[in-house]
Amino acid sequence: MLLLAISLWRPETFNGLRSMASDAAAPVGEVGAAGRVGSRNFFEAIAGYYNAGSKNAELEEEIRIARVRLAEARALEQENERLRAVLQLVEGDVEPVTTARLIGSTSSSARRFAFLSAGRRDGVAPGMPVTSPLGLVGRVLEVGANTSRVLLLTDTDSVVPVRRATDNTVAFAEGRADGSLRIRLINLGINPLKEGDIFVTSGAGGLFHPGTAVAMVTEVTDDGAIGQLLSNPAATDVVIVKPIWQGNVVTDMDAPLGSVDSEGDESSSSQDEE
Image 1 (cartoon, helix red, strand yellow):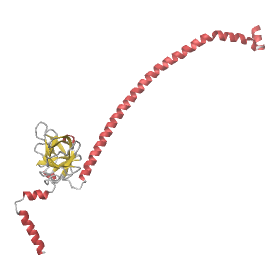
Image 2: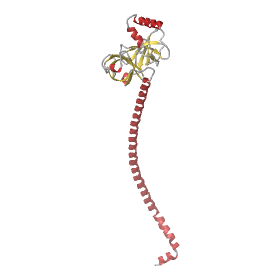
Image 3: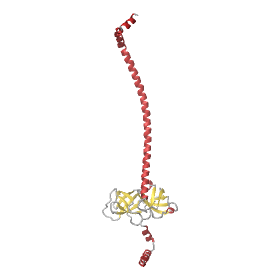
Image 4: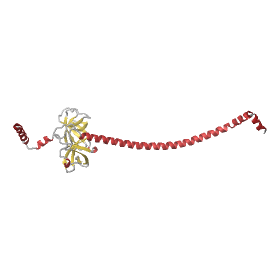
């Protein structure tokens, strides 16, 4: 009762005693607080580890999905570029005969042929050039009703008159049956060719349209070079069948001798009569 009366009358009387008790219990409180903080940090670290692991797994899964989507987008972009190139090829100066697909090719034979999903019903005829957006593929050799056989440039019987794209260095591109072309210069002497030269069709012979890409030089030889085919048939899907270049000249060459002159005389005489 006395202590209660003193604390009510003079509350500051026991301040010293309370301070001494707090100082005595401070070390124990600090140890308990440190233990509580340490245990909390330990459990938080474990929880953070598992949370980080799950988030990393989610991020890795998102990255894998993003890579797949990126690959699909790139493939779609390449397909669009290829189709645009085919469309530009169709809309060129020369009106194509038809657009078709390469549906097969020889694999075990030493000859190099491909099969086209277009034939006589589509207007395809033997000798017509077959091109892709990257360049010349070959020429039509045989024609059926709905399919055709194409002689590829790499066949040993394929010979194409070509010229270097930068000047008038003319040559012949012969197939080697190994996926490459042998470029033989017409004018022998100092070989002016070098690696990286691009050869295009020259238009000589009245079969292939001039300016169509054919091959790139990869190795220089004594009489010419070895060229890599620019339009690889194995990677070609859609192709264009074009009419024969200077087809009237080819027709006149097959006509009997003198028939052209007689027709010319008849046309001139009719003009004189008019």
